[in-house]
Length: 376
Image (cartoon, rainbow, N blue to C red):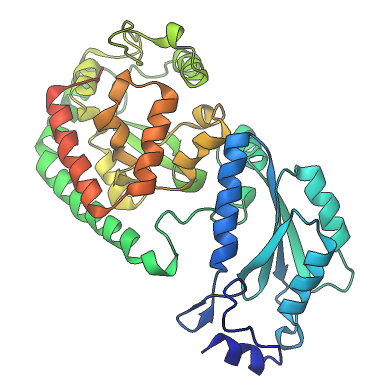
C-alpha cells in the first residue's frame, strides 16, 4: 500500500511526494524514518566523542487508542512546538514518535517529558539517556537491560530494509563454519577434555557469563585452563588498568615489543598453559556460534566488570555486532595492542564487515594460531 493511500484511508493529510522525512515504506508497511535514525546515529557518535549525554523520549501509541481518529502528523507538529529548537523529533514507526535531546541528561529529559504530558494523551512515554542508563544497568545488573535504550541505535549495514540479507549471509557462514569446526576439531576436543580431566579436578568446560550484542548476557564456553574456585581479582585489576591506559603497569613485555596479557598467572594449570598458547581452549565456542550467541568473526565478548570501565565510545563494540571467536583485533593486534587501539580495530571491522571480509579474517586467524603469536 502506498503511504498516501494509507493516510487517506485513515482520514489524514497525504505526505508530499518529495517529503522523505516522515515515513519510509517497506513491503507495504509504514516503517522507520530513515532520516531521523541517521540523525540519531550522528548525535550518538557526537555524544561519544564529546563525552556529553544524549537523551530521548519515546512516545508509543497505546494499544487501546483509536488509530483511525489520530493524526500522527498533527501530533508530531505539536511535539515540535513544545520542544526546544535544538531538539529533533521524528517517526520511529506508524505508532511511535521519538524526540531526540542532545546535551540533555535524565533530569532534563524528564522535565521535557512533563511538558509533553497530557491527561488525555493516547501515548505512553519512555525516557532514556545515553550512555548513563547503559552504564547504570551494567553496574546494577551486570548486563545491559533491554530497556536501557529503547531501540537499536545503529544500522551498520546501511538502510535497514536494504541490508537484511547481509546478516542472513553472516549467519549462514556461522552455522556452516561452526558445524565444520566441530566436526574437524572433535578429536582434538576429546583429547583436550581427557587431558583436563586427568590432570586437575573440576569440570572440563569453563562457562562464564559474557555480554553479547546490545549487552545481552549469554553463557560463554571455553576449555577450563585454570584451577577451580580461583579468585578473579588479579584479572579485574589488570583489566581496569589496561582500559584506563596504565601501560607501564600492565605491559608484560618491553617498549619495543609490548605484551598486554598476564604473563605469569598462578591460576593456570599445566594443561591450561598449552591449550591457551595454541588457542585450543577457544574451540568450545563453536557451540556458542551454533547456538547463535556468537559469530565466527566479531569483537570479543567482554565480562560485565570490563564493560563497566568502558568510555562511551567503547560501547560500540558490544552494542552493534554479535561477538566473535576471532576478529580484526586478533589478526592485526593480538596481545601487543593497547586497549583503545583494539577497540578502534573492532569498530573498523563493524563499519566495513562483509562476507568476504569475514573469510579473509578467518584465513588470517588460521595463520596466527599456527604461529601461536600473542597467545599465552
